[in-house]
Image 1 (spheres, rainbow, N blue to C red):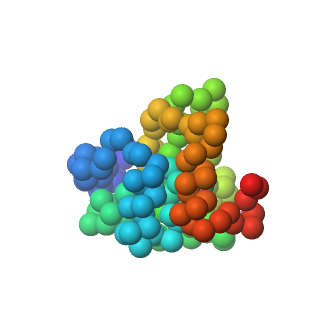
Image 2 (cartoon, one colour):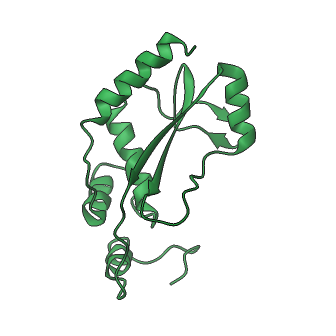
Image 3 (tube, rainbow, N blue to C red):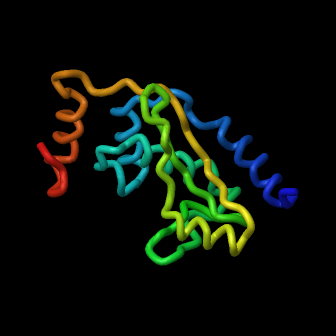
Length: 150
């Protein structure tokens, strides 16, 4: 049986998540992250970072962020157990969600008995053939990063 404190946390997270936007426009989301002080607004994987940004904004009174760390792996949040925030495109052929490394997950389960995974899953509209979104984002951040291919 799951500890009642964890069930209570899940209910609070569910209630807080109802205030999150259901439709995310890439341009608006990136600008919101930039204007909201996120250091991740320049990342091309904006969807995952935007969800983390929303979680930090909407869950801040429910769980501590970030918190528990095992080696180099830091979980996104903690309250009675470690929590991770992940996004996934529903309209893809691969439905594997990549989480933190297995050793860190095993360690947190050994320490707390459970591991919490909060997923945002939705249909994604990808960049057009002219790559206008990527060009807009590159211009906004004044170029591409050193690890990014043109």
